[in-house]
Amino acid sequence: MSDSPVTSEENKEDNTLDFTERRMQALAQENTQLRAYVATMMQRLHTNDELFGRLFQLEAAVLAAGDPEDMCFTLLRELRSQFSLDLVRFWLCRDSIIGTSPMNALSSHDLVWIEAGEIEHVGLAKRDVYLIQVEKDGFPWLEETDKSLGSLALLRLGSAENPFGILGLGAADAARFSPEQGTDFLQHLAQVIGLSLEHAVSRERLARLAITDALTGSHNRRFLQPYSHQPLSRWFGKDVSVAALYFDLDDFKGINDRLGHQAGDEALNQLCDAIRRHVRTQDPLIRMGGDEFSLLLSGCNTDKAQEIATNILNDVNGLVCNNEQIRISVGLACSAPTEDITLNTLIAKADKGMYIAKALGGNRIEIAAKD
Image 1 (cartoon, rainbow, N blue to C red):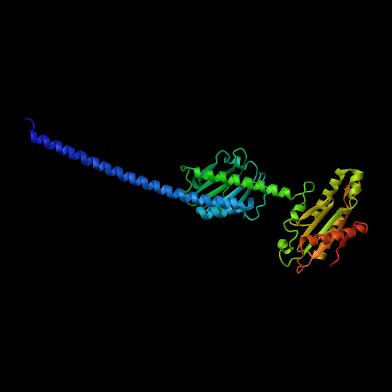
Image 2: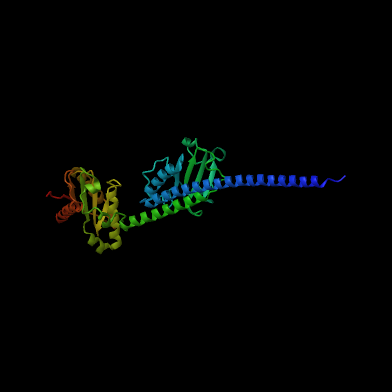
């Protein structure tokens, strides 16, 4: 017996209601998922916005750094504070472009010098960034004090063909630098830091060349310009005695005329080498022009300066250039701790002493008379 028309209509209404209810539930579920997705995307946008804000601050600090040492020190400080890292460390190649830059401000924990080929040997040259799970993967350059690290990001500095260092970022959280994560941000960071350091090294080299005498490797007169007309305390600090020695190669014109300019150049280099053997590396030696040099000795009184000058004079007396003995005339001037004269004045006094030594026959030291 077939259904009555009334029953058939009721079934149609029930089916319609059931379909509508299921559709509403599906829409509600889709709406919930969409809200969750939007919330996730908004959170990511917020996180990325914060991340790029910190990156902008970091890049601004890097660009404001004056030299490679200052830049590395700034990076260590900013990366630790801005990104809450448990380890920030440079591994830099000693024989690379950055190897000639002084890095005295960085501790042995912050900077480790490595030898040529070590980056390639451990397989870090091929990619910009490597993410490592420390417990699982290990890393041979880590130290005993790094045992607490869970993950590590290794950023190659320089090109794949010519890397000059690795920047390591470490975290105790093993999930912080998981190999499954994207590395776009870290790649950008590696490129910015690498290029910035290369440019800083180039600027430093150009600045050094501008104040360096090409023949002898000593400073040139341009080295003195920033402080020459200022009191000695602006350069050497207050209450510090400063001595100046002024050297002139005796019969330099005769050496050039008799033996040639190449012999004259050799004599100048021998003189500079002799001077350097008796002073500290931080004591500036300046070629004033021709065969004249000045030497500045911080924290040195007249007696000590005379002792140094005597040692240099005796050393030079043992030098021979093309079978001719090298002789020098030396002038000495000293500024007492309470006497804050200008650098130019001190050097001029030593210069006068040198001319007196030369007038008396040379191969001697003369102390400039006090005013």
